[in-house]
Image 1 (spheres, rainbow, N blue to C red):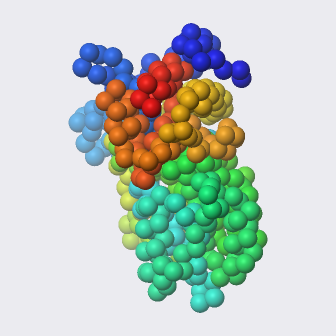
Image 2 (cartoon, rainbow, N blue to C red):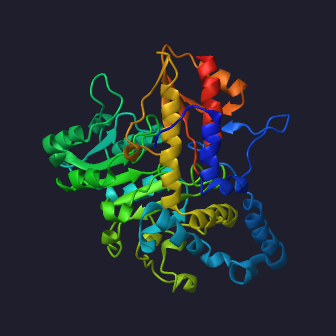
Image 3 (cartoon, rainbow, N blue to C red):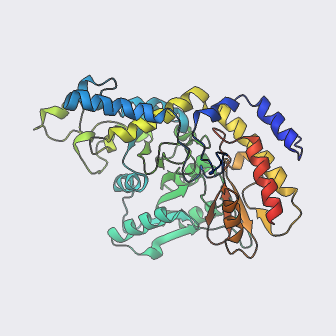
Length: 419
């Protein structure tokens, strides 16, 4: 698209946007004068859909009126509530329904998955992550190494080349070629939290599997943002949170994927609980443990319905809008955003996110020269909500669900004044 640097052009883009009315389905934070803030932090916490309160209120009403019988008699019976989320969540991440379940929180799910899939031997025990992985992922794999009697030195980092910020997949091929016989597992962020780089998940899986390494993906910054096509990618497992692009509320439940090639392998070691026992005999109470097939076989506990109600509200909205339409708008939004930033005549800032729209989601990471966080604070003072990541990056995510082209234009106009 041939973008133009003007408010009128931004208004034209909004007018032609087939998703322009979706913004009205969300609560936008406002200043004391009732004016909308410019919210660019859906990569940390998505905004609240206006229907969320109704979905939660329905479960509160059924709890009040039915008590424990709500498990069977509620409008959405609680006993099967997690199943109401499965189909829509599977579409978002490109999986078969049997490969997906909503449960627990992200790092908890990663640990439960590693119980099954990180099975080190004396010869094959190392783990690969990206060098700038999200801290929680690093802590998780370091603790897994220690738990199994290995050292943090057995963690291999896939690093950008000297003087670069982005990862080169050829370097991962080199790591696997040279050390693959000692590597048990790769755990990689599908979209890097810092740079916003969307990695080639399918190619990563192929590279890892070439040396019989298990491949896992953290989609915390990918689910609801990009289309990872998890089933076709061939990765062994994945996990993601739902409170960022999936708009389910702070600290809400997470999602989990296990490829169907593992669905019937009941010999995989795993932790057990009531909710991953065969649902047909679960209430017989004294039956020996019989693990369920598919992703449901990693559940442990009776799920929290109020959190799931918020997730259901958001997933129903995703089903209405569709990921194809969201990705199309996302590429236009970031394209316009990138164009406008590049029009600013300064050497103080630059974008480190990939230029190719297919290699990024809706986040652009702005690196600030000689950073001291002051620019980020000045944006906040102007009611522009971005987030800061040490040492020198302002992360901005124009989310296609609720951000407009005018949001982008206004934000960059203020940014230009500040730099």
